[in-house]
Length: 85
Ligand code: HEC
Image 1 (tube, rainbow, N blue to C red):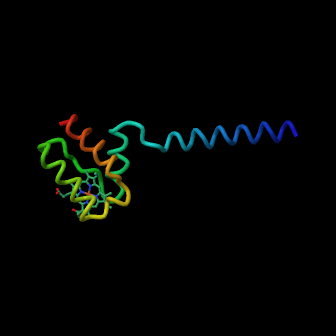
Image 2: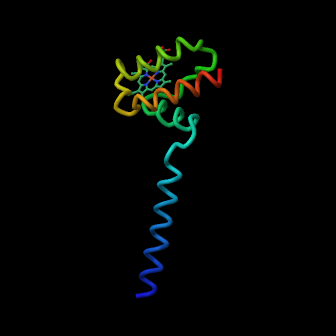
Image 3: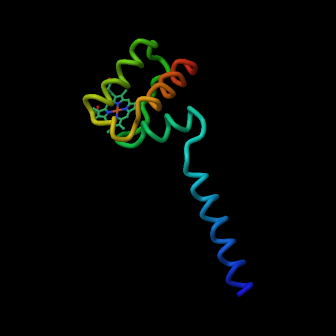
């Protein structure tokens, strides 16, 4: 009985850590995770801010990225890309 409880506890902790590691927590991680879902991560470091917004809107509305990137996430990604330019 005790052993079963300990084993279950350990498994819950392992599952929790595994889920926690897989979740993007910073804007950078969000960008890297979402924007590499369909193609290699694009190098956008030289693109002007207005173009970044257009690219991300195009991905979501024309290329189908809206299914993996929500409006709120898109804003986070745009913010990250602007700040890293
Ligand atoms: C649902 C799939 C999908 C996701 C997710 C996605 N893209 Fe794309 N992306 C495409 C397709 C399709 C193309 C057009 C074909 C190609 O060039 O490979 C493309 C092309 C591009 C291009 C080249 C076109 C250009 O205007 O220079 C860039 C840059 C780009 N994506 C950036 C991004 C960024 C940034 C994200 C994250 C916000 C993203 N993509 C997420 C599907 C996606």
